Amino acid sequence: MLVLMVNIKVKPGRRDDFIAAIREDGEGTTTKEEGNLQFSAIQDSDDPDRFFLFEVYRDEAALDAHRQMPHFLKYREATAGLYAEETVRRVGTNVFPDDSGWAS
Image (cartoon, rainbow, N blue to C red; front, side):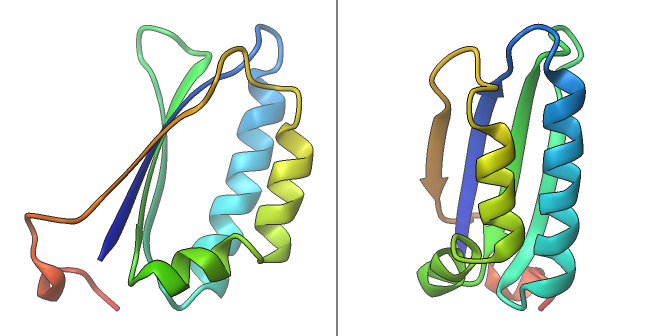
């Protein structure tokens, strides 16, 4: 499994634009991508302009496929210029649950 964690800070006044874009991307990711096992977008309770994405893909090929999907390309276009600071991305592998613990 490949786990992607992303920390995003959006510009003041652009929160609703970001939420609309990430919802559309999340819907496409979870319904149209066989290699995606989890996609969550979380809004920070202390800073409503900060979001965390948690995504799980079957493998690197599934993540590469995600990056070519029309809904992701639309998300990239819609969010260009929305970020207040550099996005922080971390990629890891799952420890728990192990691979058998993820629905396919």
